[in-house]
Length: 458
Ligand SMILES: Cc1cc2nc3c(=O)[nH]c(=O)nc-3n(C[C@H](O)[C@H](O)[C@H](O)COP(=O)(O)OP(=O)(O)OC[C@H]3O[C@@H](n4cnc5c(N)ncnc54)[C@H](O)[C@@H]3O)c2cc1C
Image 1 (spheres, rainbow, N blue to C red):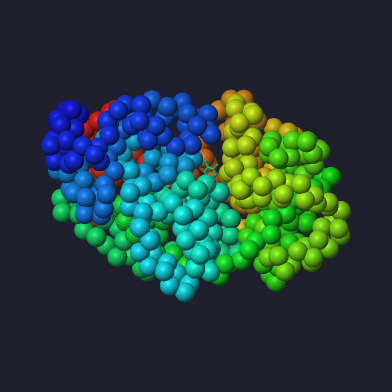
Image 2: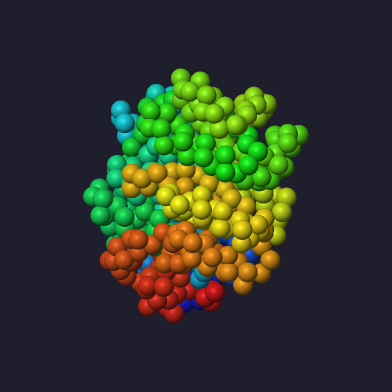
């Protein structure tokens, strides 16, 4: 069936109000932050869906899926569109499913809450805080990103130092998932081994419509910035704060000089030469943290904390992949990597990387817990020159024992967070027999693709 035929039928079947076909809008809604990667930019720039459809409730969403199944039209769910790997870029055209209208708070209990898929995490955090609770952890894009987009596309974030990642037991408690079949089924998923079929799945195994997550008791976090003359002192300090279980914290983020010099509020400070550690700690423990800062030769200033407060920001707006974003604003040809260093030898891994690449690799760590263990997870900035050189750097990371999550691929298997890829693909086969959900994002299932309406493959 030619592209235009199904679009016409769609207009006949659904109200105009929920269908968008203006090409500039459709293109915008078909993009995420894949442009962080010069490799993905080349591969994905020319891709777009054919239309955007924004169902107003779950019933309408199910009708859209049913329609798409009958016409064999590919469908890609879109939350806030803040993913980094072209996760929402439709490779075969079709429908971009805008979930933003599914944004209801469904239930709030003492230490858990249920929301519709398209609820923005910023709204969730605000709502929880009014009830004495807060998110256990969230990505630095939380003002734009949605709950289901985070679950299906993210990993962890601010708070992961305490609570781990999306895969750690007890964080994601329940998902309602709708299948892509002639008669879409709604599945209630609660078991750990079932939840992993939908976490970081790029929406290829089903559409999440509701999620229940564990929440934490609200803390009025104290934001701090600490400067060090050298990276090693900053790392040793950050590790000690991270390792002290009684110091309650939400963020321990380390940047090598001159990364933090691009943070707007720091431009007047000597940040060109300083390594920085950003912290969010329990205000009751500020004095103990201050003592540690002095022991490690660091210094703090209130200017930064004051600036972020006055501008309604938090230090977390300068952490996680926001560090890369701030950097790319001024150095647009550069890029980044993601990887987990080995907590036992990370200082040596850093030393060897710096000896090999000097300022071509600029170190940025986020301390997190994964499977209960403290890990220096990293998003170093790479001064990009060529794809070949980028690959050499990735190879060097891997040779040193750093587990790279490659952000320069749109394939789930190659992104480095593929421990559960078999589970995801089993669910895809059951829930999406015609491979219509976000097709092309996995190598696993190719059948059916030739029958799809829409554009040619990458
Ligand atoms: C500056 C910056 C900082 C970032 N910081 C972090 C961070 O701290 N931690 C982190 O983990 N990530 C981070 N990211 C990546 C990204 O922002 C997060 O993963 C975010 O939570 C994605 O949410 P979203 O709503 O924007 O998802 P989208 O980008 O819209 O979608 C992500 C994936 O989820 C799928 N999806 C969306 N909705 C559904 C649904 N209802 N059902 C099934 N699948 C669905 C999409 O198809 C896509 O594959 C960052 C990105 C940027 C650009």
